[in-house]
Image 1 (cartoon, rainbow, N blue to C red):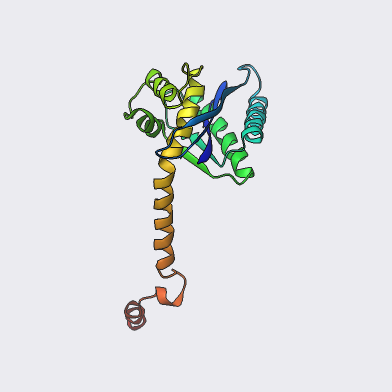
Image 2 (cartoon, helix red, strand yellow):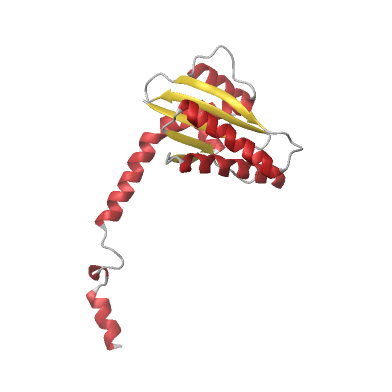
Length: 194
């Protein structure tokens, strides 16, 4: 079993959801909510409020992993900037505590939870409700999206971890680029005789 805190970043509403679970096992919601900031407050003040909110959730729920929605390009640059700033705050809060952070794209999360990377917010909310055996979909949608991020990470983490270990094993097996065995003697001799 693992506990994951999912963060759906946003300046006005930053969705937070905590899920306990493991692949193939029933999932359990440990908490869900939204960190809100006033739209007319200065950006620095809003980021501090988001930091305090996330820190409070980390203190209360003590997750082992943090999953954050990967910011992608949208048509509205202003929205993207705010989302990226809130995302950075979440990553900073987790990293300061030494918690592993995973970034998942919206289509990865939708595909993991609904089976379709093109699912709409209502479909995601409906599946989150079903998977967590809730009485109703969490409101607002940012909260449901945060839970979906946590679920996505729980289901994808084993495969991601196996891939990471394989890459590390491959890198360890390869000769060092700076060590003496890294230079091909035949190439070195050709260089010397040119």
